[in-house]
Amino acid sequence: MRVWWVLLAVLLLGCSDAADPAPSGDAALVAQGKAVHTREACNFCHNPEGTAPSYRGSEVELEDGRRVARDEAYFRRAILDPRAEVVAGYANNMPDYRARLSEEDIDALVAYLLTLR
Ligand code: HEC
Image (cartoon, rainbow, N blue to C red; front, top):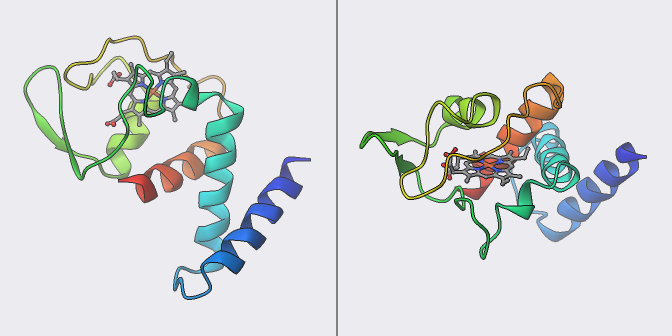
């Protein structure tokens, strides 16, 4: 069933942004990431009025004062080990998704999050 949503999303993306030079494989992965983000209810907290950060900006300040790049490795760590690095000003209550997500889900989520910066 999920496959159809991904295909539909890819189709819609393809229509709405015909000039996008990104290869179709990337677009499919991003669409899958968006679907996983909804399926896992990440946007319950991660929404403009929510209790979690917006993923926006190329750098982020952490609770311990460090500034780190919001790059692929950072997003992966944030999903797999959310207690290790905490965004400044936010509660350390992000659930641990390690056991819930497949490798493919994680790759897709990271690809999607990278488009939101
Ligand atoms: C119960 C609320 C909640 C849910 C559900 C949740 N998160 Fe979070 N998330 C947080 C909070 C709070 C933070 C900030 C504290 C921290 O860095 O751990 C955060 C931080 C993050 C960050 C770093 C954000 C940034 O802007 O630098 C990422 C990436 C992230 N979450 C991804 C996800 C993904 C992907 C999901 C779903 C699989 C998810 N979160 C589900 C609460 C949540």
